[in-house]
Image 1: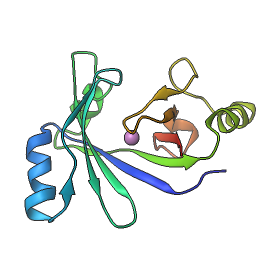
Image 2: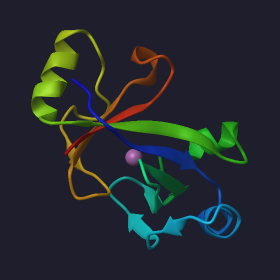
Image 3: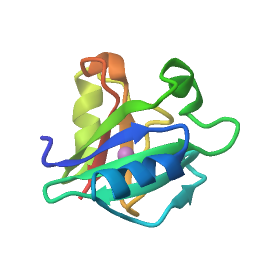
Length: 134
Ligand code: CO
């Protein structure tokens, strides 16, 4: 069911510092910094030849990243995003197998303007999984 790895997301306390590390130290090409108020994050995307890295900084007092960064103060891998062809079909299959979809269970529009869902880390080897319809 899952397809390509769309991106690996790294939560960071300061996206300007993280962007400089990727741009200046690692020599990567970065997108513009974008606020995603629906998701409580600010993002920068880094295009690599075979996938992307998503840098995430908390946005707002109820950002879902706040607890994560309290436990991982210098940042850390936050989620992986896999592509699916049909997100509703994928969700219905996962729910039927007992997997938990976060939030109200319906896709939201993600950082690339496409529908996304998040799956409970306890159901997926301790890793928060994002599905994106591509
Ligand atoms: Co993501």
